[in-house]
Structures are given as C-alpha cells and as structure tokens.
Length: 526
Image (cartoon, rainbow, N blue to C red; front, top):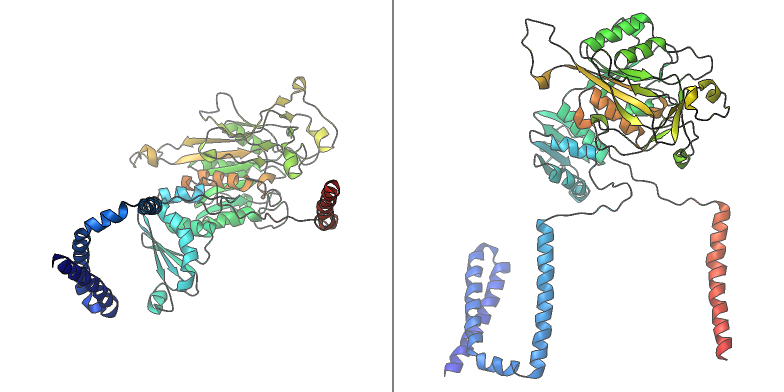
C-alpha cells in the first residue's frame, strides 16, 4: 500500500513538471502558476526518490554502477569547472591584443583623455541594429577606461524623432555629449573617436601659428618638405592652424596657443625678434626648429640663435652624424641621427619610440642656465653619434671623422631642449593667482625641422614627438602620449623571380624529394 502511494506521488510530480512547462510557454500571462507547479513537482520527485533509497543503494552496489557513477561524477566536475571559469571570465573581463600594431587596445592618448574626464560623457550611436556589434567592440574599451563613459545604441529607422533631435544625417554617426557640448563622429576608428572626445572635452579650438616669410615649412604643403601631415594631425586634435607673417602684422596675435618657427632659411629681422620677445614675456609659447646650414654659403641664423641663448639653450654651428647603423633600418645614411633615449620631461613621458632627424644640429642646455631660466634636454642621440663642427665638409659630401681637438662633440648629443618660466603678476590691481593657475612661458627648441616633414612623418615616433611638444607648449598635457596606430600592412610582396622559385619549390622540388625518398625506401626493402 505504501509503495503504491509513493508511486502516485512520483507520477503526480512528473505531471506537475510537464504542466509547469506548458503554462510557462503556452500561457505567459499565467507565469506565476508555472512557478508554483514547478516547485510542487520538484517536491514530489524528491519524496519519491527518497522512498526508493533501498533500490537505489542496491543498484549502486554493483560494479558497473560504481564505474558509471564515477564517470558521471567526473563529467559533472568538468562541467562545474567550465561553468566556474566562464562565470569568472564574465565577471573579470580580460582581453589579449595579439595584433602587431595593438589596434584593438586603447592607446596612451585615449587612456589619458578618459582618465581626466570629470563629468559624464554620453556616446549615442546611430546605426542599423545589425551594425551595433562593431561599435560595441570598440566602445567597450572606452567604457572600461572610465566610469564616466556611457553608451546608448539607437536605430534611426525605429526612432526617427531621436535621430532628428540630434541632427543625425547618416548611419554610423556617434553623438558625443559632455557638459552640454556636442560633437559628432562618423567613423568608428579609435583615432576618430578619441579626436571627437578631445574636441568635445576642450570645447574650443586653440590656434597654432606657423611663421612665414623666411623659407619656413608650409603647414599646407603636401610636398616632401611640407608640413601637411602635421597640419592635419593638429586639426584632428582640435587645433586651428594659421600662417603668420610677423613682419606684416607687427606682433604676435593674442589668441596664439603656440607659435611655430619651422626651419627658416634666413634669419628673422630684429623687429620680428622683438615681437617674439614681447609675446614670450606675457606667457607665450614658442617652438623653434632650426636646421643647420643647407648650403656652405647659407647665412647664419644669428638673431634666432641669440633668442634661444637668452632662454638657456645653445644652438650649435655643427651637424650631427650617426654611425651606429640604426638609420639603415629605414634606408637612411649617417647624416640622419636616430634617437631612442629621451631624458625625463613631460613631453617625453612614457615615450620610447624611435625618432630620426635628417641633417640636424646640436641643441644643448646652457650650463647653469641663462637669466634664471634652466633648459632641459628632451631628446639625445646615441653613443655612436657626434656633432661635427666641419659643416662645410658634411654638406659637400667629404669624409669626416670625430676629432674632439677640432671642436667635435662626442655622443650622446642633445638634439632638442625645452624650458619654461613663470610669468610674474605685473598688474598690482589684480591679486596674485595660485601657483597652479599662474601663466607660464614655454619654449621648445629642436636642431632640425625636417623630422616633422611629410617625408619623415612615417618614421616611428616623429609625428608623436612633434604633437607632444605642441601639447606641452599649449598646456594640453592630456594630449601628451603615443597616439593610436593604424593597422600595419603585413602582406608579402614578391618579385616575379621569387614567385617562380616558390612555384618550383612547391610543385617540383618538394614533391620530387618525397617521391625519391619513397623510391629509395622501396628499393631497400626489395
């Protein structure tokens, strides 16, 4: 009688489980009843199982049952481990970027920008729902980089009013909102997203003026010696690039975030030097890139060199040669010194990428400073280089060698220096500002301007170093970093001869070797 009752309980439990499933999927509105039926069924099945403990024990006393139980337990343990690993992986997200250019890892620049967000940054993605995943893969890194970043994905076809409200004109548009400011990005590459964040965070464009009238580099020229690549890079980081003829204007514009003097072929007039001095005296920012003479009879840059000397930097009348052989990595001669050493300075913080300087001169901080201003080296060449004082022989292609007795400087040679100085409170009617807010004059001097030209822009860190310098000068320290890298083209390009040799190797030599080995083995066994 007892056995019959327990059997009825077992069948009742089975019926409750099936009824719960039917209600759950057949009557979603009555979902709470499915919950009660499932628990009732589970209770009935547990009671029935406990009533059959003798039969269960008898079954597991057999050898085959014990072995089966052991196998089943092993499977359950493995499944439990897999579940635990997946749970931990979900809670602790970790990704490994194995690409050569680390194109799926946020660059230093992106992380710096995100780390300094002091208000929520909302990113609205407007695209077809099927395209959301490609944005999620990229934006997930930004969300993990800062708790201030939130993302929302909107299909403009399903919510046209929201798309119209944000003036979205095309699919794949990201709208960035920060402190009431709005910026739109229409590409999903890291550089485009980060540049959009820079623009919406800074809120205003800072002007960088490139001087003209003395043979300087042109920021709009796409020729090898031009600065078009630099000009575009500055615009991407929310700078406004404009030319400046000091002789015509008579002074430096008050809205100049920085003034760049890039490779003048002739010297500045005294009036232009005075304009620069006035600008620096009020907290101006100046980048001097002074090349060595391009010809044996080129006039010296006396006034510009004297200006650098006033700021504690000695611009050498020499040419740096590098016989270490590092320049051969990109087909350069010994007249292109290479730098991989960067003394501690905000411009080169966490910067360890190789840079190269086609035909450069030494730029050395004056020992003890000048007029209370102490410059610091920011770039220096290796021990396999020296500053050759016989510039004429270098320009004429005559062989030279390092001779300290002749005025040559052995490496490492300083090739760039930077100096800053606080500007005092000149208006007694105004209270003195805090130390953090005091205006500051900043000057950076390079012994070469060609390192940032279009011809050299592809050399490792040249553009990054120039952009870091402008970021430091304009007091945009959050822009001082290594920028996102493009995916490297790793395709193998073969000549016709190489293709022919590979074809012979694959179609004749390797099959012929295998066939010959088979014949030889057959002959020995015969």
